[in-house]
Length: 420
Image 1 (spheres, rainbow, N blue to C red):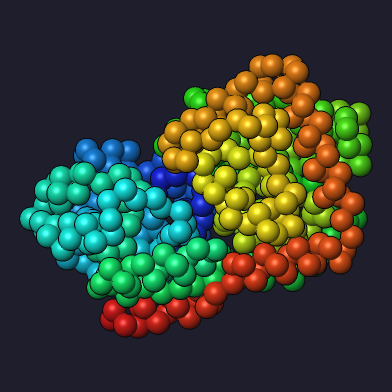
Image 2: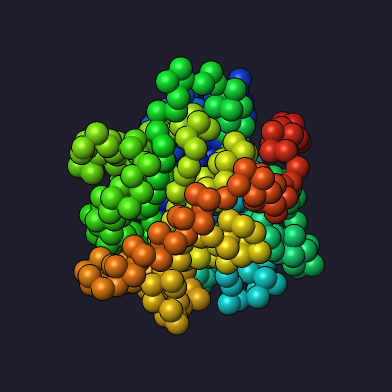
């Protein structure tokens, strides 16, 4: 079977889920198509695909290539890329939508209204279909994609069951499947079973910033969060001398931010790693700080490690931490609210992310605010480092309980069997 695969171009979360799903499908011809940070992640993990096509103009000249790839495909798998689902419907190709943030999407229009729009979507052209849904917000277009897809796979998270029930009550036609963590299970097994290095782990601390890029954030624009991290790391080393070997990893470190820096016998490596190499380090490094994206959190938790959340880069991180507030992970998480108490964050994806960008910029530029940032996060780090092994195990267990669901391999396999 020839499977066309794509992911939302928004950070590494969707792309990492796509790679994980692709690795569940050996024996099929897996063809990636996409642009931006999703394509960067696919290239860095090229072994998960037989072919990779990067679209430099998804809505320009690249559309002809995408239409040809659709015509040549037997099945389409989209991770939160609503346009790919819509193109598949117009091309009359069976499509599976995979969503690791199903409970996150906000809607002003009722689900019944979105369902009615989907029921009457024209199939004459992608342009006509997109125009038909133009009244929907970006979040609502993903919910519409669930209603248009033949199957949708939904990763478990607090609130997801309630949202699934709402879809059922609305009379959604497509089959919806709940699943546990959508991660590279084989890679996690290999990482967990790896032979320990004779001289101990390569690093004392992993700092994982994730992909960072999204609809607003970029490595060279709206990037005050990265500048804040760059300012803070030397102070982290000064405040915590036990960290002598630190790995800072993520999408931003493929370019000029990458490299190795050594000072007084302390080493910091800044790298953009292939996913399975990152998993090996996550499995063996005793401490980790990570941007609170669900994919990285699921991976670390399944490795039996309890991470400490870095401050929020965008609104989805705020959503994740807020909905895990009852867990040890949520209680320990770094928050910009520690630095600016009472600072109101708009309850909106774009506006909330804009506000977080502004907060990071203020802290980076203001020495007093930066000192508060450094001090309050040191308090979080101290609590994290002094957790007992029992407390860490309990913290991992409660996260696994909150995020658990039917195993992804069997869910995906059953869908493909049904669509043959």
